[in-house]
Length: 108
Image (cartoon, rainbow, N blue to C red; front, side, top):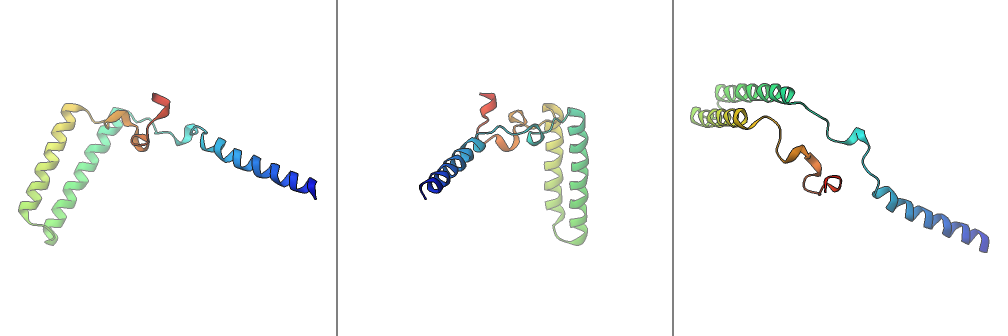
């Protein structure tokens, strides 16, 4: 009886310790933010802007938004294109993505 309780308690201790060790394990390379070059990002941005403009035009045709609202959106998209041409197409904050708000312990 004592031997089985001892083995059970040791297994419990090992299980609890392993959860803390697992929690501190670094992310594998497959889960890190993918590397995207500027040309790919620029092409994606232009494609996305064209899609958004098409969606606005369709919404006007279907009567979901007014022409004034569509003009406001198109002005906003023009501003975004101008901004990214002047400042680049990569995301801000070094592209940390999901880890940005949690703190990135690897870049301290």
